[in-house]
Image (cartoon, rainbow, N blue to C red; front, side, top):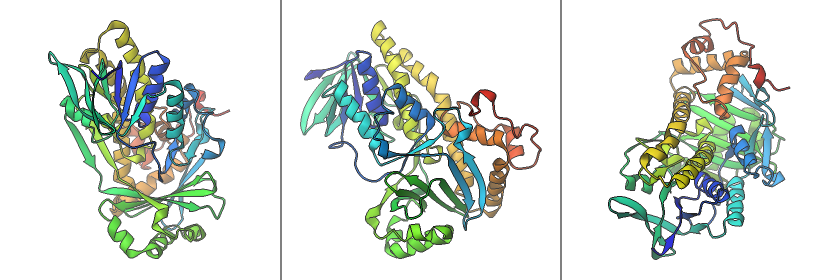
Length: 424
């Protein structure tokens, strides 16, 4: 072997980099291969949910985020296309201290994690490094064949972790089948100058229409606009002025904001997909994050769940190190502890896609009716919010809840929020 380590991680994204830090603090040697040439750059909208804030806080990284790189947001309003308010979701319902969503400046969280990793485990991340295949001995994985800066390298490891995204090469090399679903709708993301002092989030939903406005640091506003996954070229061909007009029709009270959209360089494209790997672990190899369970951004939990994966897996790998047991049986305890939660979030996101993205007029009316019910029902609002915030491991709505949310049955507990979760 050219290099040896205890744990070889493929992918230095949110899950892989956090895993590197957690393992280093446990004294477990690790090396991370990242095919990109350096830390991520460019525009992306990012909301750090309460469970993600708690993970970073436990790592000592929440306070390490630059103070001008986040925007705490308490209220998120859902409105019909045109401006009529349907529902307001209040993060104040959640327990302190993590009872706000943090809208982040692009890539700041990731850079902070990578900076910490570099300080605590210098040289742990190898950029411009691609996984190629497993190395085997006696039908057992003993490491990987990789290419680093164009050179072929053999790396020995007790276990290989695939944190390399929805089209994971590690997962494929494991021989693990996966359902990879690409949604027909994706998002155009824009960062515009905040001309109006926006302090609260706004979701405009219509017939096959979603336009989201999030106040962002640096006197900016993130705009997320739902578009068909194959329509970007046609959208650009229509021109900037046409897109401004589309946004103004949906949110006429934000015309001044949209006037600051002048060129396509203010935008980025965000595809959407879902991954369901049949299993997450085999002998000496395991996948985490999007490689195991990518989900639609409606869940607002992609990065959060990858980070939770990392913390959970670090504890399991510590046990493996102690027992010298890197078998599928030992590693699959990670999957057993995590799969039900992420499956619930995937289903919740798909249900939101079905109702929020719909162009069906009957479903639109039902969706708007549910939003109006939730606006007056603190119990249902809390249940959905706690799932979105990553604080709930079970589905927010049972069948009775669904009938009550649709207004078909009264809810005698409409104003009840669990006492331990009420904000004081």
